[in-house]
Image 1 (cartoon, rainbow, N blue to C red):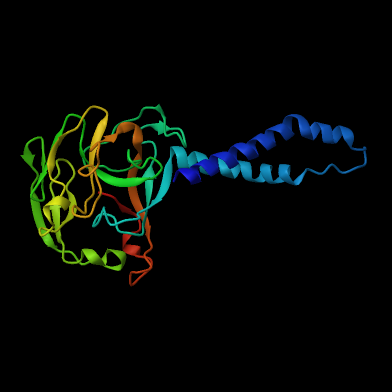
Image 2 (cartoon, rainbow, N blue to C red):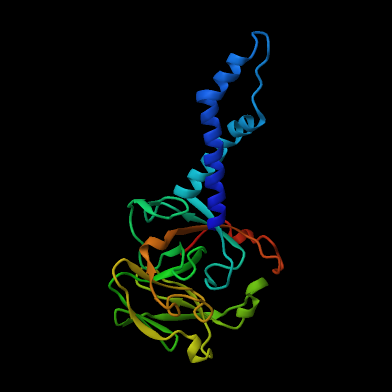
Length: 267
């Protein structure tokens, strides 16, 4: 969320500036103006700035360069991630980036096929989305008849059963739950074979350099690269790699907190 990041940066800068000005100039002036027996009191703004600046700086540093919390807002990554899952996003897997601008200043690795990534989509640059990397630069990705191909080779599928959803994901009950054998990263997907053709997102795409092809694991209910006008995710829009689920909270489910999902690594 860009607005939260902007507010956090602004508050950190403001409290740090007040603290610095007081340290360099204002405290000396107060001391010089006070009588020898008079107790020198700090202004409220200075007192609050000294108290909150270290906390804000720590939160900003951890959130920008170490790990950031993210809440799953939609069903596009079911069954891997459910609506209401709270996850941690590794912020240094793909290089360190400045807050707000997201401009990289230190390179450190690149996404691998199968990584679940948080990013800002080209057509909604102020939003954070989450999908799975299917195509790397130079790959040719195809999707036809609800089946995925990568570089001309069809990805194998294994039927695991019929999916039973709950809470806000209940509408996916009855979908097929399959293991998709993506090279190097098998994972579960949901699929409805009766979905009308326009909603399957069929086509073939060759990923250009510096870009990625991303898809949701809920194949018939995901606004992903198949449907974007540009089709590809620029490397500059990456935010980080999804790591673990640390909580699930869905008011429409039978239980608000599903302890079985806490600490689960994201495949």
